[in-house]
Image 1 (cartoon, rainbow, N blue to C red):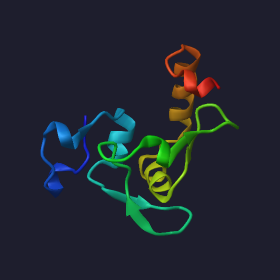
Image 2: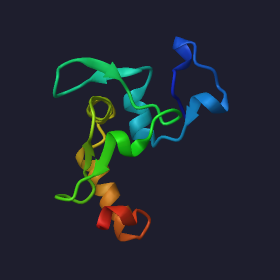
Image 3: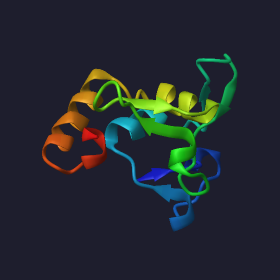
Image 4: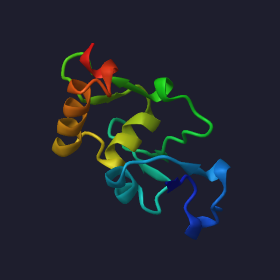
Length: 107
C-alpha cells in the first residue's frame, strides 16, 4: 500500500489516501508528491489514482510490449519518478502478459 499523500506530509492512513503500488514503484515514490516532466522540464504533481483517470495520463505502447507511455505531463513525471519503464519492470510485465495476467499488453 502506498500513501498518496505521504505521512510525513500530513497524509493519513485512511482508505481515501491509500493506493495499491508494487514495491518497486512504492520505493521510488517514497515521500514524493511531484516529479520532473521530462518534456517541459517543469516539476508537476504525480498521478493520483484516487482522483485521476489512468487513461488520461498513460497508455501501453503499441511499439514495444510492456512499455508504458505518457499522455500528459503528469504521466511523464510519474513514469520518470517511479522509474516505471526500467528494464526489470518491462520484463515483469512481459512475463505477466504471457501468463494472461496482463492481456492488454499483448494487443
